Amino acid sequence: SLAFSFFFLAAGVSSASDHGPTPQKADEKIAIAAPPAAVWEVIKEFGSIGDWHPGLAKVTSEGGNKESATRTLTLKSGGEIVESLDDYNEKEMSIEYRLLKENLDAFPVSFYSDQISVHPADGGSEVEWTSRFYRADTTNEPPEDKNDAAAIKATTDFFKAGLSGIKAKAEAKGKG
Image (cartoon, rainbow, N blue to C red; front, top):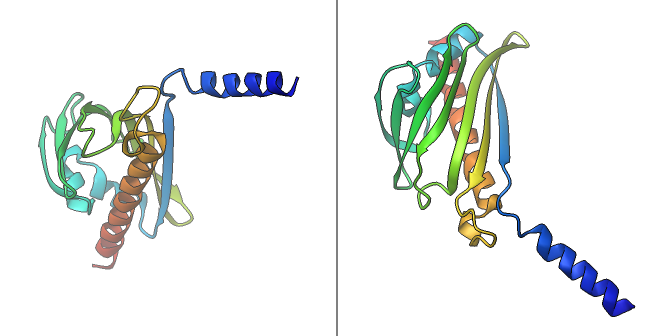
């Protein structure tokens, strides 16, 4: 009966991982000692991410802040990814966009849909950056560099670096 229980346990473990990828999420926030309008000024142009994100070597964009505008991000670590604007809301100080063209070696995510928004908070602002995404390798047994953990780490690190860049730029403007 011990062998029978073990078999059931082993069978349960393997079938749990055999259903392909599940959507992952990242949600990062940062407090900024500047009014929301000043923070929004830093990030409101869809194509301006290169002005404040330290992880980017170059950004080219087309379409401004109109729906389906695109931007191509050249990562300092190498490689390019292309994003497409889904929703731009000046009043809500919010931008929603998605991955249009993946580069699994440059960024280990096969698809994402992100939102970055500015909110008033404690006499200053809070910027929140959220993502819903799938790992790079959507097979049942992805290699370590393209699994859920790699996708979560890459997205979280990218957001944290970007949020620090927004904070530095917005707070410097306030002092300048």
